Length: 256
Image (cartoon, rainbow, N blue to C red; front, side, top):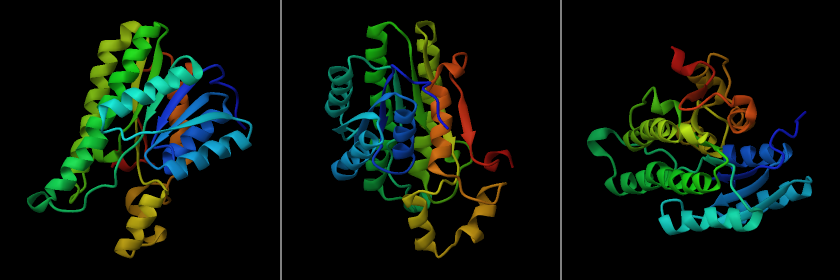
C-alpha cells in the first residue's frame, strides 16, 4: 500500500529506464508525484513513462546524457516547462562498474565512467540546485552512491572513485543549501537484483545462492523497490530534518 506523500510534487529521476531508477520513478508516481523519466535509452524510457500513465500516474520522458551540461540544463528546463517547478531529484544514472585492476585500468572507460557517474551527477545537482534556489521553496535531492563508496572492492577503481566522490559532494551541497531548506542526501545500495547484477553473475558463473551470503547478512539480493523506498523517504516531508547523510540499503554489508 502506498500513500500520496508526494502529491503536488514534481520529481526528476535520472537513469529511470530500468532497474533502481525505474522502480523509483514508478513508486514516486504511485505516491502522486509528477515524474520526469530522464534517461539516454529512449525506447525503454518511453515504455516506463507509458506504464506509469497506464497505472494512473503522471509522467513525461526526456532523453538526456547527463555527462553533457547542455543536456542536463535542458532536462531541468523540460521539467519546469512541463510541470511548472522542480521539488525533488533522484540522481541515479550511472554506468556499469569497470573490471580491471588499478595497475591496468582502461583509461578510455575511466574517462567515460567518471564523466557520467561523477561529473554527470555533479552537473545534475548544479542545475537542480539552481532551479530550487530560484523557486525559494526548498527541495530534496537524492544522489545514488553505492556501498563501493564506503567499502571498496578490487578491480573497479573508476567506479569506487566516482561513488566516493558522490558521497563527498552530497555533503558539500547539503552544507551550502541547508539555510535554503534544500536537503541533499544519498542512498548507498548494496547488492540489488538488477539486470546489471544478473549480467555480472552470468559473466562470472555465480548464482544468487552462491554469492548473496558474501554481500548480505540477509542472504539475499535486494530488490530495486527497496532502494526506491529509501529515496521516497528522503524525498518526502517525513525526513524533513535529514540532510547531508547517506542511507545504507545494503543488508548490513558495510557493517562487517
